[in-house]
Length: 197
Image 1 (cartoon, one colour):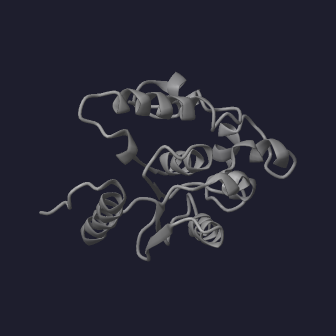
Image 2 (cartoon, rainbow, N blue to C red):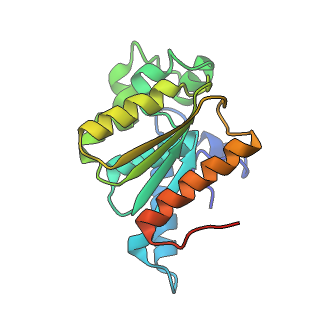
């Protein structure tokens, strides 16, 4: 399923998160999809994991601050601290548009309403953070700050950085390494068998 904010099902779905509602409808959609999946025969509700990249990486982080129902989370190139992100991205106009025109400097309190960093003390779920070091859309600082903050709080957290990659992992050898890291981490926390091949 495509939660609010996703592409592929029209502009209205994309814009459903605009106006500083990033953590609302998308989160409800993710949880509704999880509920439906958990109710299916043969699904172990205590072994579910969530993974996302870019906005999906942000959502995986937001989920980590809102619930403990997942066995593991993987976030790739995800936004973490919305209060500073607008000043570090290569696309601040896009970010401010998604926030409904809010200015992160003048409207800091409203911008932080859905910032995962603000709710870190509630985070308990093990998480793997993956990021390209040359990412200018979501700078590597988002991953480094997140890793440090979670580690200091005793959350099980791992970090995989790809020095020669940008927002997406495109080089074949790096893509293989990305999937190996993700599948190994998810398998360790969900009990899924190793992926080979």
